[in-house]
Length: 456
Image (cartoon, rainbow, N blue to C red; front, side):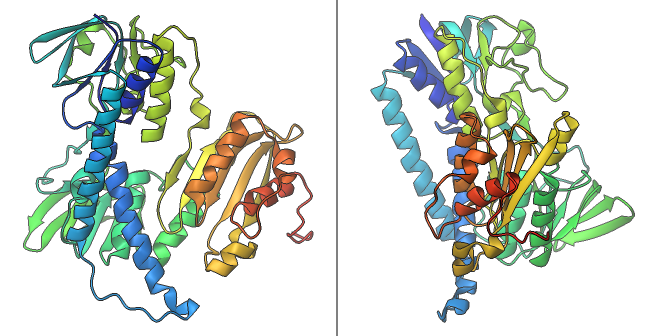
């Protein structure tokens, strides 16, 4: 009999298992595939290795501006894949060591729930006081004729040859990131989404900046467009698209970037676990499902399907399973894109804040007049802070530009500890750094920007 049984060994399940053990719980972790889940093996880490390679290639092409005469002899995707595999293996080994070091029983196999306190794995019955569901998600293939042979993002990170042309299907982060990455490697990319815009959950200014940057690099973006049918051709695929007009597009490959939860055929239906129309498990802010003793975290709950969200949820769920009553701060989950330029955000967009009834005041500061950005030649971007007028409370922070995915951690910390625009404005930053943009945006939101013209 275990105190806590965790089903799924990705970032969320891994964190939940270790935290449960730290709090004195006898803990078991069931994993059907490789420890590390999608993130380590097929998602976050592999895609970021590809994005790092793309960023290096992009920098080499800009080296001439700094007096460095450099040329790229060739790009070897197989070397990127080998590095991806090596890094993933190293991380997996580290995870297995820490599970063992924390006294956690790792059970290989697929779990099926029998009741809220019991699951079977390969015929073995495992009982536990509490169960945390962390099964993650898998690629979703749209119900469109002719998609046999198209690839998903998990398969694309194993490419040893870059397709000459590519249709990327999806509105969200993975689609935009993969489109930007493969474009840098020379693929002619068309990004197609049924939504009115790419990154529909992000602030309007962020969306516009990203769209402009992608288009400037030759990426074609088709919004409010549906993929109706696909046919194989001698050179790849011919896709029939419908939007403002119907058209066909021939590409060497199609990349599908949508996902669905791993919640089928594991017994949750028979237990009456509440799910939404897409199969994601509904949870409250304590990460409890509607079935007592069952918690759910990460991708299986929908929302921000991000590994750091899953990890943080894993900690909260484990602490609650061991008797605490913590609430998960959904509004403090940051999100980001490792594109060129990078994108990151936390909290509400300006539009969302107004829709929720806030009287909004924004502040901003462009990279184009930040000393470090100018020195680095990284002037594309800026910081935007969304605050409540009067109180100065920070409701959201949005960053486009070099270093955005690192800078956003500062914004999360500021919001978590309720630092307002005035506190950001009076903070002292190293000079020259990108972080000065957060300080200067805080000053702008507080109506005393030092380095912006008064006549704006």
